[in-house]
Image (cartoon, rainbow, N blue to C red; front, side, top):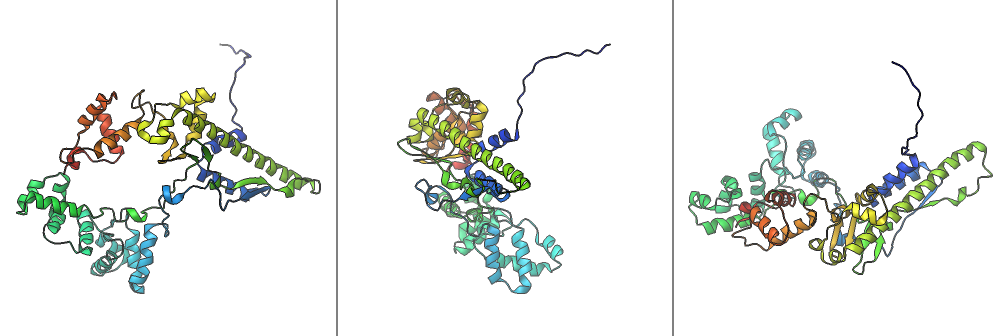
Amino acid sequence: MRQEISIGLSQRLVVTPELRQSIEILQMSAVELKAAIEREHLENPTLELEYFNESPQTFDAEKFFEPPDTSTTAERFLMEQAVFAFAAEELSAAKFLIGALDASGYLTISLAEAAQILHVEENFLAEILRRVQSLEPAGVAARNLSECLRLQAERKEIYSGLVAAIIDEHLEEVAAHKIKNIARAENSSAEEVRRAIEIIRGLNPRPLSSYGGEVTKFIVPDVRVTEDGEIFLNGATFPRVKISEAYSDLKDFDAETKNYLNRHLNSARQLLRSIRQREKTLRRVVEAIVRRQKDFLRGGLKFLKPMTMRELAEELELHESTVSRAVANKFLELPFGVVELRKIFSAGVASEEITAEKIKALLVELIKSEDSLSPLSDKALAEILSARGISIARRTVMKYREQLKILSSAKRRK
């Protein structure tokens, strides 16, 4: 054994703090960038922020986004009602039960367990629960689906006859579409059962879903493209960043203060460079998409042509990872609605000839136009797509259907 010293040349990429910041900012959404800018402003005295009150490029939030939940969460919405509905000695128990609801509005703890935790009688808590269940929305604080639907049906004064019987006894058979079994058990006709089921389907199995079971998440487009192909970056979402003129000349400051301010000035300039680079790269990527996808921009997802990030990167002479970061966490506002920018690209999973999103759009179109008495099975959908030149397996159709939250053909049948 012996030791030798050898000299060689090698290359490696050194990720500097500046490069790391540039990469991070490139993949931020407009909302995330706003938060990052405001955090930097708190720490950097040389930065000034200019907010936009009005702008011709401001996006129409009411048209494209869900309205903000003014109470922020469903829990707060219920708590505000409870303050007026319960006496002071009852309020803590009511708030405990409200806090034990899941995002859909169901109670996640038994009354026996709750009574033991709160050191109260179970009968007392049962009365509190009954009154919590009387709050808005109807069906909240139920312990199972049957109770949730019953509470709503009672509120609508339709809890009687066949509707009540189906809610109490036959929900599993409804899910399995065993209409004849229900009709036989309730001594009714199949048509009467169908009518009752249609009434029940007007109820909400997730009563808190429309009240924001969790903190509302906003989708804010980063880019808007008009019908004519004009591109507008949504700069109004985050403030304009400037370097304060108060620090343009540091000659009157002492050495220690100059060093402090110079560090922050360098940091501010790097932030500005990263923001400008993000805007430049994002614009170039969207311009390339507009050139390639004119039919999609006008007509929607079903007109989307196959396009990979690698192809676009080669066209723009960028690294594929740069394109991937540029489209990450970003949304595109188009004349027909808002689309996640990443979903415009072919995933390579479905087929080299067609994107997964286009297949999903076609599935939605086919299922919407199907005969409700004889809905299309996954196999039939695969065969129809195959006849249109789209080779796809039944299992893939099933996967996409489930991702779209569309029921199986058996459960869609009426």
